[in-house]
Length: 427
Image 1: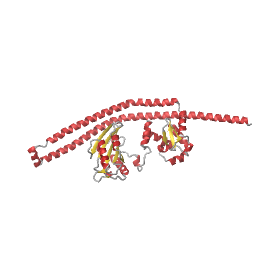
Image 2: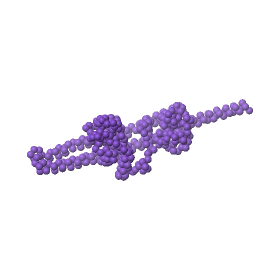
Image 3: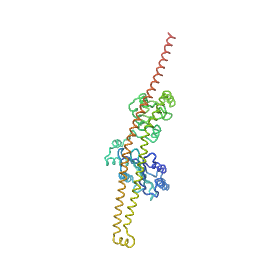
Image 4: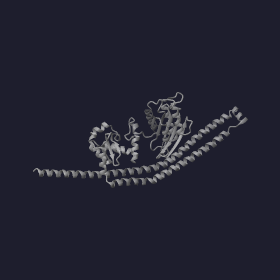
């Protein structure tokens, strides 16, 4: 289970993000501990209010828990991991909120703790929390028998497919997976040993090297979007200069964009639009099925929670009626019968809570199984669309090379004519 944590502020923004059901199939506020409020927005606002009595700016600790892709963790497994993280970080008994998110057939959890100790009115220090969470993540993978990620196998090495929020947002605007973009740049970099080789490798992917105004080496795609080459290849600017030379020798962004505009034919631009439209149409049936499934699953959970609530209230009334009132109740207290009844009721209540939790897990597991089957269809279609985009980029590149070749032929012919004219003029 991958654990990622951060110290942060922004209570309002965090609560809005965690309760966002537009980007998630299901959002469940699982627990609020140590708060007066019964909703997440109010709970995080309480943490902020208490922090105003201190000098702490990052008054919350936020943790995300992500099981392996093909694994659906139970509530109990999430809680066990959360309790372990809480103990390792030193946040025991601090107010906390737990939210479950489900999306694309996967379930993960978010936890938010208050860092403010209400007794001392000081922020709890969290030294080396990243290392502690990495160690705990590795232990959880080994404990559950899950396959260790490469990062845990090789000294917590950073994956070359990691990307920043800015990179994600840029790729999202282009309807591309940022991992796909980053992999294209990394592959082109690894298989090239010079500026020309790297330029040709990127051209095959539909990117063209230019001199950035402030970023040195950049690449531009056919839509005119600019990509910083060091950032997307994962190398330092110094290393880029050693392989590619001085960026001053490259054409500017404006010149490169003009070149692209001249090389890309209107027909290919229309073809790009047609392909995008076809992709949208291809996805419509699956998206309709997805929205219908989400609606059905939410309804099933609502009915289940209502049934559990009604059953709990009925069982609670039954347990309360076992206690006698008046003289008989007094006699039960004196004889010890009242304590036995209370112990029996407490045991039944605990069993009831565990039964309800298992019932919720069974429902979630069944729904997630259906959602994962649908998600496989969606991912297969995405791979097909990705291949279509690559084939289109190849066709655009071939057209560009043809135009460049024709231009070069024309220049060579003109140069040959000039040579012949000079030879006739000076025999």
